Image (cartoon, rainbow, N blue to C red; front, side, top):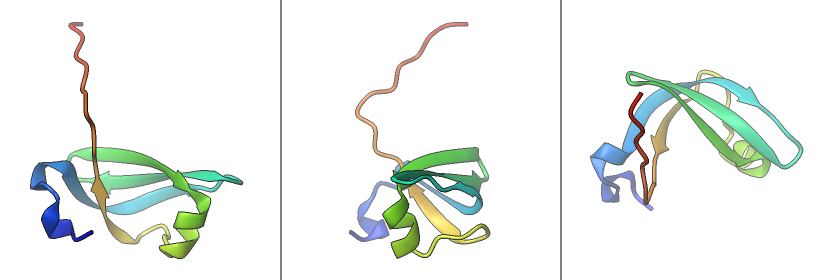
Length: 71
């Protein structure tokens, strides 16, 4: 999949600020101009993508529903 084929509103460019490795899944925090985006991905993917703190990445967001509640 090419990043050009994804809607620009659904991607955030940033740098990895923290990785919490788990046995099966890991949390990856990405510092973007819009704030921190946290992704939960497989630990295998972290290793295959060679992700490290400081790596520049694109975070793709795919959501079919966004709920809103009034405060």
